[in-house]
Length: 192
Length: 93
Image (tube, rainbow over all chains, first blue to last red; front, top):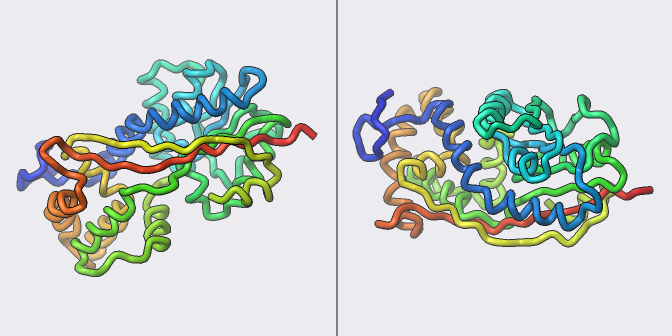
């Protein structure tokens, strides 16, 4: 590995786990307009300020950190893979948030979270990648209080996926897979 | 994710919203960002010997593909997506 960070440099080749985590972190930073929109929509729906938020499939800590800062209540940022939970812990520390706990949770089994215990359950781009959506949504319903609010950001379309297909075609010399299979491949590649 | 999945799970759907978001970034970050959906596959191909230079090929192909798709210019890299905010509530009774 090189310490050089310039594309085009022959020694530039940083595609390790740390580089992947860093790319995820910076992409989630860039997603702020979506977290703002999510918070605004939740705010419109809630009749009282939330006392507990659970964010699932939260990657390196968003939208959980944004919502924790916005609503100022105890918040759990959760993800199903350890590196993302560790990245979320770093994000929480960097933002100086004292009301956020980071947990390793599978969205299909939120067993560690008590039934009817959260006011808001949030997520960004995670539910479409769930291997068992009915089970994941049943778990979301279980942990929400009656009258609690579910808010999820999902892609309707995203230019990155056909782009990824095109570049894989260039790398392998094979044609891109159909869109649906491409999305499945993308889902498999995204740590959740 | 379909609305039917939410209603079948027992949620009551609310209005929500849909909007476009554009990501702009420097090429050195975009090079990695664009790899995220295929990152593990490229590493797997390289480590298994299926394509030992998978990442080098990726890095070499990226600028050409990014320019051809209109995402990379002298101003940097940009890519957009349409997102939806789904809002639903758990019934009180």
